[in-house]
Image: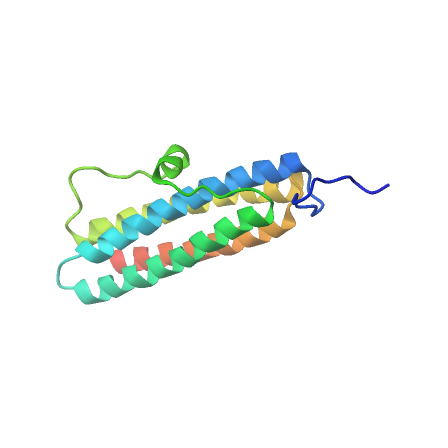
Length: 165
């Protein structure tokens, strides 16, 4: 007997409950990516010092790659039949990253280490979510997607750490 589905519902072999849970994880990632994108862009605009040009370009490369990831995460949520968050208020409610109001870092090393810490926060979250998303929620596609996102963040964190030395 075929499963009855609602018009427009994603019938992809994952229960609606599991798609909702995975979409919630993805929306948390989307918020984290958006916060990291914004901070990276801010540091791109405000970096100073003897390594200005190389850091300005490094930050630009990274925020461009993060922007592509933001779009891919939102599209993954839509593939599961759910809606992506899209406002600062929504992102602020679920992000794990800290936005510093007030005193801005002025030295490049602090910028590099702050960004590295944010990438590593995202890596740790993703590493903890990979097995449950595959095994408990039966979503191998999202697991594969998130593995690629985690690897991207590992590369970016490595570049930032190596540059900060």
